[in-house]
Structure formats: C-alpha cells, structure tokens
Amino acid sequence: MTTIKPRKRYTVKIERNGETIQIVIIAKSLESMYKEVYRLYADFLIDEKGNDTGTISFEEIALFSTVKQELYIQASNRCQE
Image 1: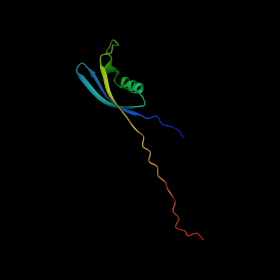
Image 2: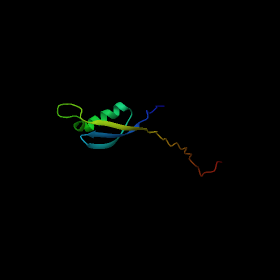
Image 3: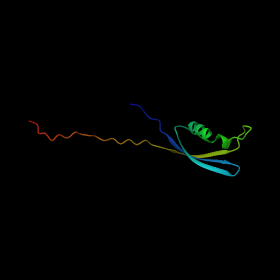
Image 4: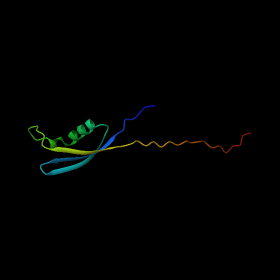
C-alpha cells in the first residue's frame, strides 16, 4: 500500500508597486509552492535587472485526502440447490 503525501492549499498574495494579485496554489510543500509562483509570476516579481521587486505572503491550509470505501456484494437471485 502506498502512502500519499498530503497536499496543502496556499492562498498567495503577490504585491508590487501598489498592484496586488491573489492566487491559490495546491502544492506538496512550501518549496513547491514558491517554484510554482515564480514559474507563473516571475515577470511580475522580478524587474529587468533581475532584482526582486515584489513581496509574497501566503496562508497555508492542509488538504486531507478522503477515500470513500464501499463494499460491493454481488447478490444472487438463484436459490442454492
């Protein structure tokens, strides 16, 4: 049986020069969240000279996997002889 590492929901606020963007990222770790934010919004966070110009703040909420387990029993209409 394999175990699944729980994911987290990050509500991220990105700010730069009075502009604000709010997004939601689902990731397995804080590092993964930052990678995704920079992958999607690097042009917003970094200026032409490569300097960081924005700030990132976030709220982290753990997501729990829910597995619905059901037992299926095949019913037989035939009588046993």
